[in-house]
Image (tube, rainbow, N blue to C red; front, top):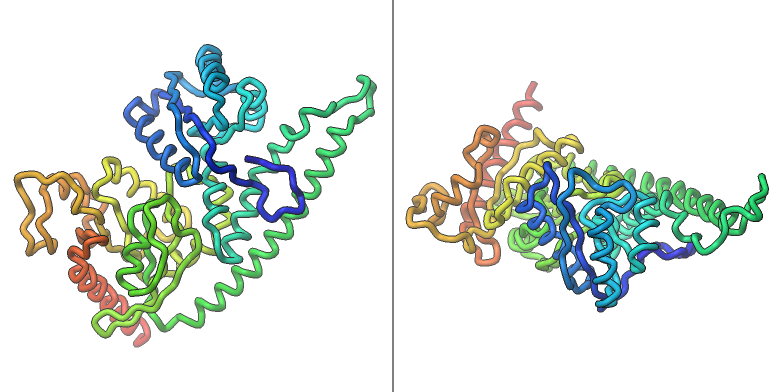
Length: 403
């Protein structure tokens, strides 16, 4: 929920024990099955922010309505339900424009959240370090700035209709914008200084091989980090359990390296958040090896792989050496035919191997390991694969240094 508090470091706050409805569109580019899947993910996001989902609403349209996102008839149905059930929040699966937010607040008489704001709320709740809190605060203010007009709708923007006469709402709005623009400038300066400090720290670790965990949110990165580093790290079945970059020194088969757990990616991650987290994502870009963790049990994990690869492309890390780590294989529905344990470490359903795309045209050059981190299945094979890749990286470094 947006609150006007220029002195607060966190401009988006959380109300607990509130009810919410979810709203999404079925379009030619997003069929019904995909919309239902996205609503399931949106519900998980809402649950992470401690909201109780009461009902989902979907409407089939060619594209979102410019003024209200959904059509007039569906909007009346939603408004009637909100009034009858006294719903606190209406959450939309796509980012809303400032005008859509203003219109929807008037017509639905409840708090309006879009996917981007909900994700920002969760990041704000999860951020622990000074760097992460600064990054989230900057993203929040950037999101808030173009939406400030909705805070002053109870005041007049013009007084008496006379030219040049400004009402209290417009004056206060302009003051508020200047305050937030000033805060954005200061936060950017603060992040620049933090980024320089992070760069200095990375230079001090240049001799050690750096391995980074990447993947969609809630695929088990933190669980694997905890398992490999044998350290006490939060591993929770919630989206974005890890927002801060966590670095641990790990030794496998006498090979020492630095292992970094980074923020998970998700569909429609707000652009402001990606931009603000550049210094954190630099831990990925500067890595020597990526462990791309994949939830092999998820029906749409191929789409998740594509989204992660797209994000890696955006931050300049798409060409780094990579190991595909298919996690959660213990909960994949077993088929009658299984893959030999000698080739991937454990009995693996042929169906899962074919669905994974591990041997597809785009991934032929990546080694793939199938594991179950929570049960410790095939972790030794993963460690062996990591060791081999590190040895290859060290050999390459040696050859380059010799010339």
